[in-house]
Length: 190
Image (tube, rainbow, N blue to C red; front, side, top):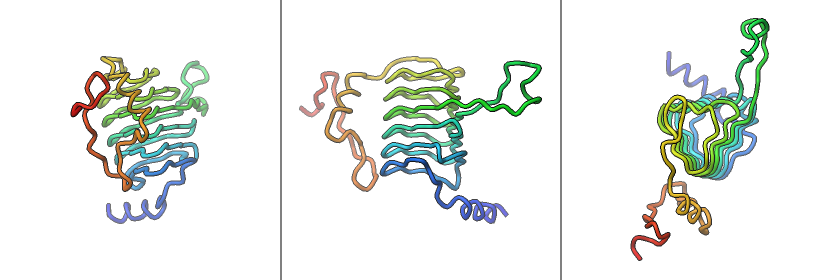
């Protein structure tokens, strides 16, 4: 029975029609859920792991080279709950806010990104984190609610971005072996 259900889902969602899809993107549309994919923008070489749930009703933009691990949830809408007299379950008001994920961001497994959040370039979101506020560039955030625990090498990140080909992928989408950089910005082999 499960095989039949999976086959029917595949037939219905053979290829998710996104608003913009960069080159070299990889995602599992059969095992993931994309709500309002026409408002989802993916940069080049974005990877979305299986069982992801992206609600792009309010708009979701994921920058080039970003990686979403399995079971990442991104919400760009929520229900109105502020006024007890008129909020859920008494109305059907939905609030939408765009979610922006910067370039080269890594979002670990089972992280949840809430509406209106901007995650800066080069940031890392830890496994199971609930991100309800903006994340600065190159920050590492963990927990519920997510909080900054440290920053990655900002200068190294900028150097990599300014290089001729910042992507760590070969022409066929496989990861290259990147050389480790020292703190001086020079290769460790020099």
